[in-house]
Every structure is written in C-alpha cells, then in structure tokens.
Length: 234
Ligand SMILES: [Zn+2]
Image (tube, rainbow, N blue to C red; front, top):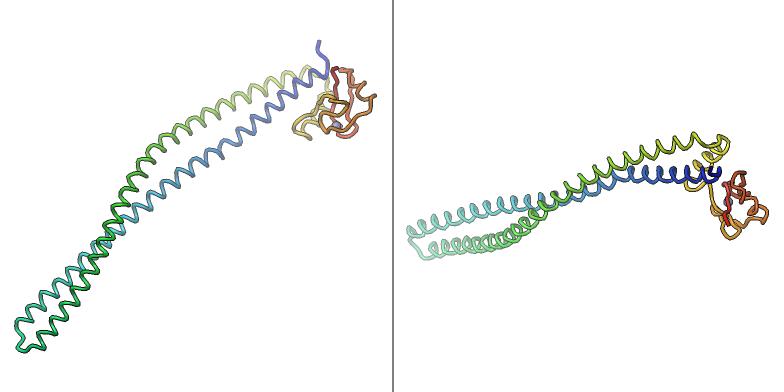
C-alpha cells in the first residue's frame, strides 16, 4: 500500500495536468484569432491596393477626356484662325492654341506618371494575391489543426478528470480536504518535498525537527511558513 503522501502526490500530478490542459484550451481561441487577424490584415492590404488601382484608372479616364477637350478647342481655334483678316487676331489665336498645347503636355505627363504607378501597383497586387492564396491554404490547415488540438485536449482533460475523481475516492478525506484547500490556494504545489532543510514550496529554512517529522509519510507535517504539506525522502 502506498503512503498518504504518495497518494496525494498522484492527485497533485493530475491536478497540475488538469490546470495545464485547461490553460492550453483557454489559449487556443486567442491564438486562432491572431492568425485570422493577420490574414484579414493581408486581405485588407490587397483590397486597398486594388482600390488604388481602380481610382487611378478613373483618374486616367478623366485625364483622357480633359486632353480631348483641349484638342477640340485647338481644332476650333484653328478654324477661326483661317477666317481672321489681320495679323494681330491671327497671333492671338496662336497664343491661345499654344496655351492649350501646354496644358495637354502637362496632362500627358500626369498620364505617364499614372501609367507607371499602375504598372507597379499591378505587380504588387499580383504578388499580394499569390501570397494571400498560399496563406489562405496555410491558415485553413492551421485552423483545422487548432480544432483537432482542441478536441484532443478536451478529451485528455476529461480522462484526467475522471482518473482524478477515481483516485480521490481512495484517499483519506481529512488529507484530501486539506490538500484541496492548499492546492486551490497555491494553484501549483500543495505537497512539496523538503529540500536542503527548506520547504520546497516557499523555500524557508525548516527546523531539524520538521525535516525529521516529514519522513513520516502517513502523518501530516506542515510548513509553518506557507502551510504546505511536507514530505522528506532521504
Ligand atoms: Zn513553505
């Protein structure tokens, strides 16, 4: 038959596993959300770039019609120029035509800038689209794994809990209730070894008598500083 301390150490092992499993299960949704948020950020970046392309396309069309307007004006000015009688009027039209041509040059320069920007944006979008496609596959696999991991952890948790319940039935109720109080307070260790004449929980130095008492694995020895159950196996 095992000692009461040894029984409690088994229970403690199960309780620590239960805590670890519960923490891991709690962390899963957070980790999942991080991955999803990253994917969403990449989708948004692509969408913004596509929106930029659309806007530049509209600007391009607008420039086109502005250039046509000016060309139309030049045509009209030239017709009127044919009909003028004196040199001054002729020169005045020449000046107006030159002004329109100057504007056209500026508009065409802007057109060229947009064309170059669009070329770059198209390339960026293609790269982003390809990366996103790959990322979506990876994320889908990751999420699948998270789900499987969650299911496994849940199953393991239930098994450990059932095992713990069965073990608890075999333990002295006085010891178990003291242990339970200590474990729910400290959440890590309720039963600790004496190490170098000190409590393995709070690390305070213990009197020789306590170390000696802790060898008795079937009688309760408590740390006078933290209250944890002590045991000592030389
Ligand atoms: Zn202690």
